[in-house]
Image 1 (cartoon, rainbow, N blue to C red):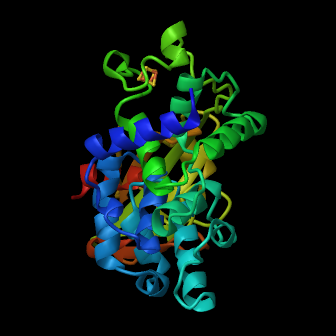
Image 2 (spheres, rainbow, N blue to C red):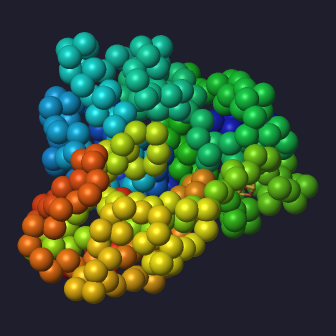
Length: 354
Ligand code: SF4
C-alpha cells in the first residue's frame, strides 16, 4: 500500500469518528503535555477527571511550578506511578525558572526536559507545533503491525526502531498532527486489541493481519513483567481521634506519600509473630489496648502484588509514646483526609473510619 493512501484513509476516518476531548481543542503545549502524562497512566475515561482537576487547580505551567509537591501528589492520587507526578512537578519548575515559562517548540528541545521521553516530546511537538514527527504509542504499534504485517517484537529496542522508522516514513506533509491523532484514535476505537472491527474497516483490503487472520497474534510483544508478591502488615495506631502516620522515604514504591508503620515479611504473618518481631507492635501489647485485624487487602501494581493486613490498635491512655524514630506523627482525621496517600491506604481508611 502506498504511504499516502494509508495516511489519507486514516485522516478521513479520524475526521468522521474522533472523540471530542478537551486536549484536542487546543495548541497549548502545557495542556497537551499534561494530558499525555495522565494518559500514559490510564484510559481516556478515567483520565478525563484528573485532567480537568489539574487544569482547574493549576491552569498553567507557572501555577503547577509554584504548587506544593504534596498538593500535586494529592491531585495525582489514584493514578499510581507517583514518580511521574514528581517528574511532572519538577519539569514544570524547570520550564518556569529556566525557560521563561515557555515550552520548547521542537521535538529536539522538548526531549531535553526532565521526565519527557520520546513519546511525550513527539506528542507535544506534533499537537502543539504541528511538527512532522511520528507519535508512536501502543495503538500505533498495533495498527502498523497488523496493517503492514510486521512481526518485529515491540518489547525490544530493535523492534521499536523498525516501527519508529515506518511510522516516520508514513507521516504526510499536510496535517501531520491530524494524522498522528488519527492513527492513535483508530487504534483506540477501531483496531482494538481484542475485537478489531475488520468487517467494516477502511483498511480491510490492504490489511495483512486480516488477510492472514493474524489479528490476535499482532503486535508481537515478548517481555512479560515478573510480578513480585509482597506481604505487608500495617500498624495503624488510633489514639485521641488521631492516627499515626509517616511519610514514605525513597527507594521504594509510593515515595513521598503517607502510610502507617509497615512490617514487611516474606509471607503472611499473624499478630503473635508481629509482637515478637516489631518494637512498635510490642509497645502496644497490653490488655487495655484493643486491636482489630482487617481482612487481607490485595493491591495489584504493574510489577508487584501486595497482600496487606491492617492491625488497628486503640491505646486508651492519653499520650501514647511512639517507640520509633523516623518521622512518625499523629494526625487529626481532617489532616489524614488531606494527606497524599496510596490508594491501598485510602481503601482501608474508608472501610474503617470514613
Ligand atoms: S482490518 Fe482489522 S486488523 Fe486490519 S486494520 Fe482493520 S480493524 Fe485492524
